[in-house]
Length: 355
Ligand SMILES: *Cc1c(COP(=O)(O)O)cnc(C)c1O
Image (cartoon, rainbow, N blue to C red; front, side, top):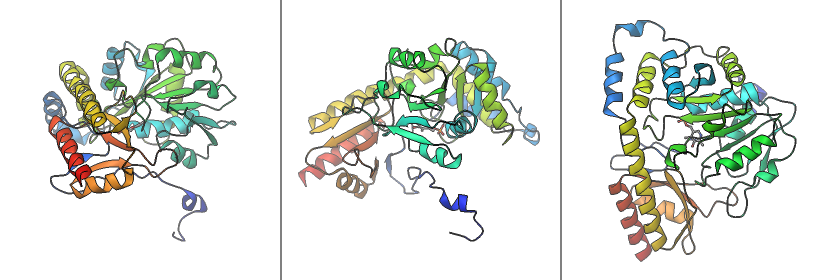
């Protein structure tokens, strides 16, 4: 509290990011980072971009990156918006599209940044309960609203909603914007992305990030795809805030990441394979695991409290995420790591269980 803060600033309840401790030998399975580094071609493109041109402002619309993403998804460049991480893209989405007279809807168990943006932009919201199996119950979204947003696969559950269910929602919800936050979609089966529906539904916005499947969390690149009119709304807000959210080096890296499709496919498949293996191993140890289409698993154990397990793992230098929230406080969210990291996790859990 400071006397220099406005009442509004004092009322904010900011997001708490998963910690990034500066400890050596830490097995970090708490923030869904990719265990594999970025493509070597991305690193090379970044090195090449470190030159005297950095005295110049970057292209304000990151045209080359927009073109690359448009080509990749077979869209037009006026259907692409880019920003400094998808968190920034989402902030602009809430500001540009969700400040309506009616409140917005999102799941009760979901990305915990959504209520924070609502606080920042004074947006009313209702949290719609997930079904008992933690799947999204879309019938409950059939009511007047100022917008709908959900992650798919959902975070922190990892559960995927099928494309035909999303299309049904779009058909029954024509008058407000539906945002699908696809931070983890590349870890689901190909063909799961709502990008396929962008040309048919002008109220659909799909948000993705290069942080997870493209191993660039440290660089901050996110993007949104939707109708030209939604994108123009986002551009209006962005150009009222910061015209240059992406620098030369970021743009070069983003372009190179999309062009190295082979590396992307290989590392994506490694993570998916590890998820399948980790799921089997955890099941064999008595964990209940929600079906995951993401690069993390959401698990609980009937004999051990999640909070205690998180602490015992931390004592062994492994960090996982525990949310002290209703309905999910018995769960741990564990990022799929490299094969060695996953094995270390399993070995450490065995040691903890043997006491
Ligand atoms: C990680 C994540 C984001 C944010 O990604 P950045 O691009 O790194 O800002 C957005 N939404 C969900 C659901 C996420 O898990």
